Image (cartoon, rainbow, N blue to C red; front, side, top):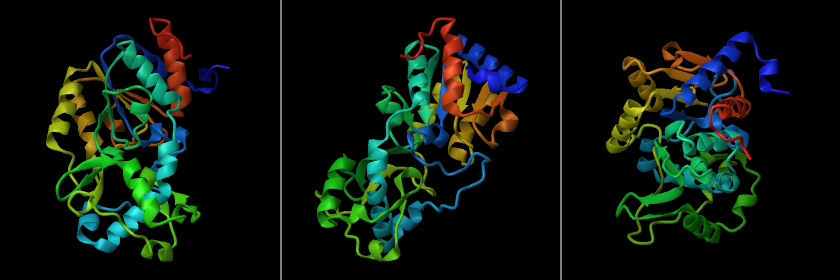
Length: 291
């Protein structure tokens, strides 16, 4: 049965509008955590848009406290394998399919899980960086998360068997005693502080990256937001920018978003089902179906 069989008229009309936008080609996609939940990665907000009980670490906490860094790396080490094993879902694959066909001209993601890259979207702009990379705050040496993971495992053998509960962005809930005993690995080159190559809360996205995203939005015929509540300005600014320029904005997200008042099209449906239906319809105007 087609997903549209269970939709009301407004959602059906919204999907039809989204298909028309994509059929015109040159659409920019802005994706958020909701796109990755079907890959088993929790997001910060539930289907109603209400915030889950989770307090992410800020940049100021991480850089200002050795205890905070120990807490971060202990919890992140416990949750990393879930992120590393996650695979792209239907939504990621549809976005890449539409990009290959030229209907999507660019992908900007707020996610740090690397799943757009895993789906083949090598040119996706990772607005907040990627958890699979690590950078030293001293000498700026870059390394892979897999390398650090091996080092942390050697320093904290068996730690990952502690029964962690996964949280958004690879974080995990752990008993305080396990965190206090965790050993953190320093930079191999200079002994400095290692940080995941992601933008923490309270930290600014690098200006050249933001400017590149503005250029992509300016060059696009429409902006489509997938799975983001647009709660933080990091993503909302591109929606505001597009709306000011008169560029159509479509939002597909379960639950309210801060950009709803700026959107010309608003669809509240599970992303995998909605995007599969969109791909089927756009396929009638030149996009091959998912294999």
